[in-house]
Image (cartoon, rainbow, N blue to C red; front, top):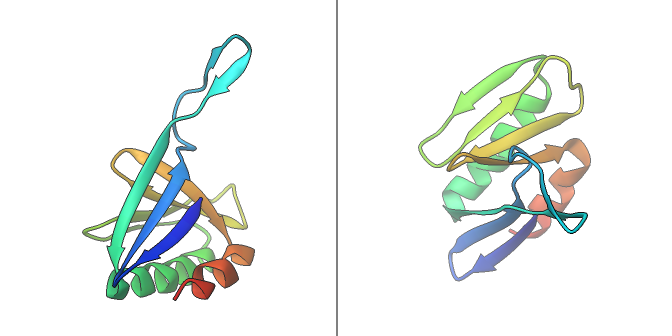
Length: 100
């Protein structure tokens, strides 16, 4: 995923990791999503990711996104929006903070 700051909002463009995998001539067809957040919501997203990473299993719903942590995956959460999702690990927090 990639984060862009545009004026006072943040856009996160990502490859949908929840999409069924299809191939064309042996190459995977990637599905993409975009999440747009205000600065306040973006900061909340970072806090929510940090908090959810510490849980063994959690589903946190917000108006603009959901964060899902599965018990069988120790170091990753998924940010879910518009039936699409991307994964975030603890090491990604530094990247997310660098965009503020």
